[in-house]
Image (tube, rainbow over all chains, first blue to last red; front, side, top):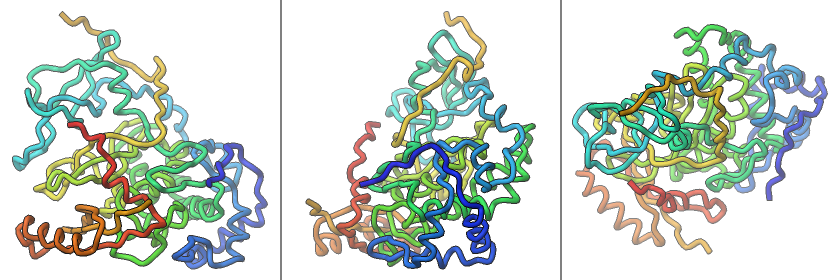
Length: 351
Length: 70
């Protein structure tokens, strides 16, 4: 049974955090975080006691709480504006479900094809709106296509780990778990300088790269092995799986989401837990989609394939180029709360 | 009750995949050889069997995602 994390922060003794920071900075965290490969329990009782006294961080933790808990130095300038900039605007690349082809032709797959099977394509660009319909340019389509706004939201809004944690694809995400507290705090401490330097006031290519780099470094903290390639813990607990645990792609991407999700509001990004398939063998494959705010640029995080953050257009390019995946659906907690302020599209008349 | 026990996996260019999940080791071994042949005996590919522990049922997703209606 999982104990759901409360979303309210509790004050933490700075002494414990200072001591933990010392462990992290002198490189002792990894050893202290070692777990029993059968049970997933921390081996070091001293570490367990210290980790349990660290701040509770969940996806509901506000950027200000990260600061007040002493885990980050400042809220990135421009974050509020980045998170309130309309997400549905001209030029945004998004997912739509339409008649599509995935045949390998040495170029990007998933273009529009009349009579093709209905599937999700990533090669779509938002143009305008007509009432409750969105006008979208789809690669390969001779003219823009119309899609119901609600359908577009369903495919493009965040889908991730609930703020209270929970079980997803067999992985238990418990933000109360002392080891999860420790992993989140260790990540914040080790990325402290880069987080403090993040400035979202102006979305320049440098800002976007700094954001992407942070996501990349966070996702790189998931060091798991595929079944048959490791002898670490292979149970349910996300925190115990994070370092040297064993799990298939769906497990690894859920563990990555558990780690990334609490940072989303702080660093300005959204997550989607993706269910996919490979193009070549048509077998299931799980990965994450990350959307940076406010740019809405998309990246694929695929820990099982050792790709912490790959440009989505590259990640979905073509099996022949080593990018062998397509999107089928999503899992996880849906946040379909699009307000009129999230949409800034010119209205068009359609004959 | 968990009845499925073996994953047949392959990997090319550091991209591990579970190709199928079956109930017995002999069945998995036969399937492994069949997949190897079907893939054209790619010398760069690795194939192996992974015993799926009863403790973790996360592997079930590999067979359960029938949401693909494309």
